[in-house]
Image 1 (cartoon, rainbow, N blue to C red):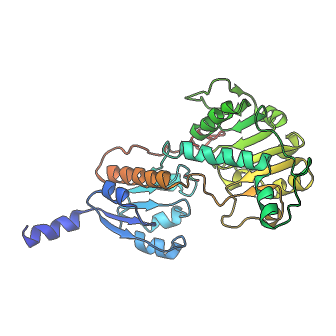
Image 2 (cartoon, helix red, strand yellow):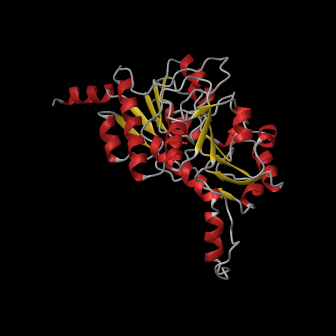
Length: 339
Ligand code: GLV
């Protein structure tokens, strides 16, 4: 190819910044772009992100990258943001829309994997799996005893699912296999209603469920959806599981509910200020903690990267991406069923 044509073609290729190393499948899905990769082990620093965004057309980012109005104001060429997550509370959708930037996410491919982890936390919290592990590991197990680490039955219990989107529905399907009674709270229509699940108001769900599991996205309307008042409505000895976003729960109120014995246990994969986990939660034996890993299997994380790359490639090619994120109505009082 003559040199002038090659130089022109290079100039025309879209420039893309990725804040994580792409698996080869995702790189292939991205197509012919000029790619800059941030390879640090820690999330990219804001100043570095702003600097690198100055002349890129597309961004592949993670939920740890805060893409707000200030960052976007410094990215004049940016046309597309592909978040490698189903949640997108790290992106200011209104600021992006105001600049004509398309935002995409990665639903569906992580649904079953995330529901697996929610169920793992349900089982671990109810059956005190981590307490047992620590006891044995510390060499403190003195032998079988009829009342050692008594927990609660999961089979036959009542499960309250807050947010019956894709992941909530996948948890409901697992619950059916355990013979659980399933209640759910979801104001928007549910596309794939699992058989046998009963819709109730949030207050009723909290009062009736032995185990409550949260599957709503974080929005202004769902921040601290579960606070002191809601925790006080839960059954004495109930269990709370959160795999959605940490800020859905008032963590200080949760720690108090666990300390007072109102709640028997909690299973938490997400925290309000990650990676900070409040001491009051870390200190409690009856809290199972995982480091935001609900979708963390090799296969699923690879699929998420591929979906993100396909979304970005579509926007850069002037096509509608498979997973555009809709701008929430300013007055929305209910979380959409994204999770
Ligand atoms: C993980 O939390 C995600 O939103 O994909």
